[in-house]
Image 1 (tube, rainbow, N blue to C red):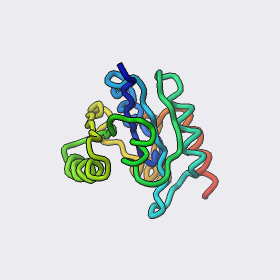
Image 2: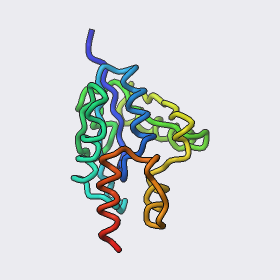
Image 3: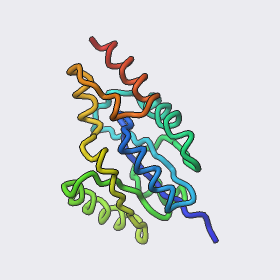
Image 4: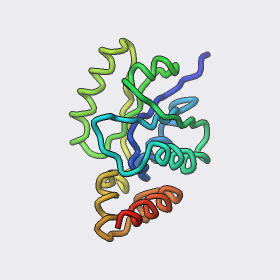
Length: 163
């Protein structure tokens, strides 16, 4: 029986507890999860790619068979190259489904047979987004219950330097 690999791609700018929740759930389905820290040339990031990679590695290290790597290009093609049988996508609310469903169709068109598995985040995390975390932190809000420990240290240090 071959190893079932799931690929969870995102910018993780920053990694949130919602992302961690999705990785935990994915590990109950897949033998191994690859977390692909993506670089989108059309997006402005708060954290560098190296910061995002280091945060994901540190905060996901104790979850089990999780590999964290940087990714460039089309996620579907990366999935094929890495031997993943499915893309993993997290859904916070029903509003996320429309965009994610369309993207799943595009990815299946790029790599026929590539499945997308939608996982629901725990309700306690459904309001958390990376954009909200950054906005709250910049505005002086408390993000301690939204991001994992290493991420909290790094993002607070990075954003406080911008003052």
